[in-house]
Length: 150
Image (cartoon, rainbow, N blue to C red; front, side, top):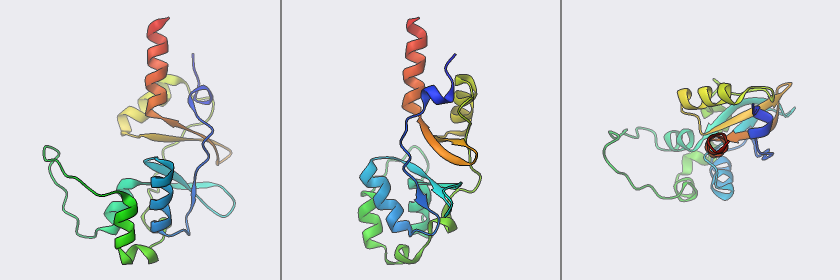
């Protein structure tokens, strides 16, 4: 059975907790990812910042629209470029501190259950508190397809 180490990619993209939200927005946009682990000055993972966290922090008073209505938003880079307050806001103030993660030895089923039940798109894989990889939902889909072929 596949383990987390077989599902993860070695993308160690992370952002420091003391970084500005605008820097996080540009990083996510440039990398084409929906979120990234947040690290302290000793490279330990202390949280996770997502596009949603950044948009909500940058648009105080943002009204959540029912899921049936469509909304077109500009790119995060554009939102952050036009939002003066974001230049002074730190990632550590708005990151998710309730971190979901797995170890390299977690089974495929443990990973799938955590990601699907918690609606996680990117799941950090940690060894001794430090980032060693990230599992994306697409990796789960690929593994399911491979299991169905066998």
